[in-house]
Amino acid sequence: MTIQKTFFCPQCGTRLSGKKACRNCGFDVHSEDAYHGISALGAGGVGWSDAVNDPRFAGYQSNKRKYIGLFTIVLVLAIIAFLVISGDLSLDGEGMIVILVLSGMFVMIALYAMFSTKRKGKEWTAKVIDKHLEDGKTLRSHIIFQTDRGLKHSLIFDDRVHYDYYAIGDVVKQHNKPHLRTLEKYDKRKDEILFCPSCAYLCDARDHYCQACGSPLLKGK
Ligand SMILES: [Zn+2]
Ligand SMILES: [Zn+2]
Image 1: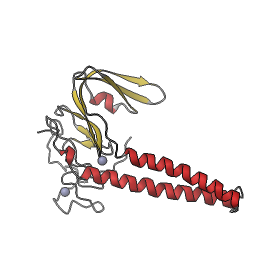
Image 2 (image 1 turned 180 degrees about the horizontal axis):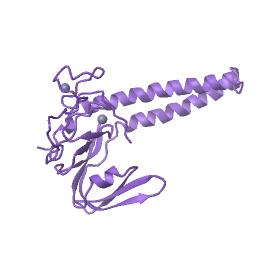
Image 3 (image 1 turned 135 degrees about the vertical axis):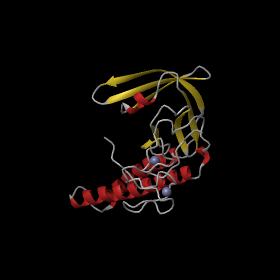
Image 4 (image 1 turned 135 degrees about the horizontal axis):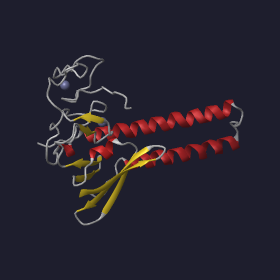
């Protein structure tokens, strides 16, 4: 089950206030018939999206870095406070070294996580050549792609939605930009859903922006 996150207008990307309709375009995501009977099937369009260079993707990654930084500071302070209160750590010379080493470790992990939001890798186009479901403790989708150059990529997703989403023969592109690392399917007309390129939220194919994070969705024409 996914939790419904409605923070942004899925039609124009404006931040929503409470359960009200969008103040910019009037779209009401909470309404029963928000899309006025229009089918989600086919709404994703066909072709590579030109939204990949949208500055909103950089905004999402920059927010992510801020959250990582803030989370790390709070976590380190909480651990130190806990150790001092429980009596396992005293604020003398030895205690200060422990605090320094501990903080240093967390800062390194945080810096690595922040840096990886800026990393850029290879871009490739591929075809889905195989897929299977792993029915273990958690249901996993294995999707196998073969690139134009003959290289094989295998991706694993911890759900079955991706298994249903990718069909053998589907053509996909791995976008590898500094602010965006996502797969885009060339022909989205057979799907009623789209994955958010920033936060992977499951979106309606009729939407243009992710209602969870406000990033643009990659759609065809
Ligand atoms: Zn709107
Ligand atoms: Zn999103």
